[in-house]
Image 1 (cartoon, helix red, strand yellow):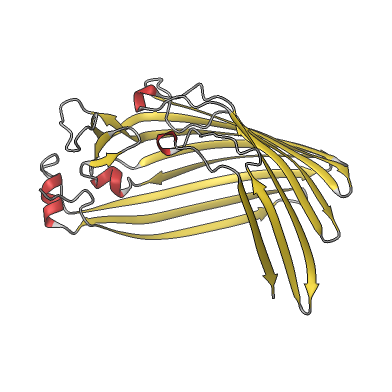
Image 2 (cartoon, rainbow, N blue to C red):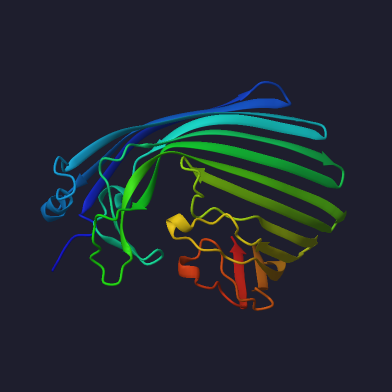
Length: 318
């Protein structure tokens, strides 16, 4: 038996993009952008087209979509205080897999997946804001963004279909969910301990639900990173700690499982010197210093990340 899981889809996109940065005064400004585009897909394989027409008899070989986006962001910065906010709207066409996949096997969830050429464009409305303080040795910044995504595209199980892959759990068809919401928040800070020494810290949290109040897959749990950096003359060094909290808002409906928390330590050292007319930089370091065994929410089938890794690089600036 032979079949096209990707039926030789040709994609052509033509678009126009414009951006303007308008300076209101010395403390504030407005950045605006707009884009329009024509997105075209064509199924070049007759066999692939006929295979998809089993599920979509009225499907044509070629399809055109009109995509558009617009955004505006305001920022203010004076003295120790700065803030900004913005909004935007954008559209995207389904990917080749989402629109034209034919029994694509996904080893992550053990399902065959079928595309849907009749999917509408995914439409996203966004709002974002930030506020920050900076004073002498210290700076703090809080950011947040909210997305309301209409016709959210995701693969859902269809019990009426039989999988082709031996041992697969079933078949999923890419289906539009009426909407999904995603919220992101982040807190970053910096403190200058000494002229040559500074500390950085960052926290990021993501939350996502669909219109049926089901957790969206691949939403990062609380993640963090903190580091101490040393810079003096030609020497640069860094010691960092990064990790995730336990993933609690995972999505069993989308065949996602819980991942435990982890923490990883990294260290690096660099030296820069002049050699004739060139600037040469040498860096050495170690990632995952303690050789921790860990996996993240986004790793395929919970495959572990890299263990202890030593690296070095040479940078030459001409």
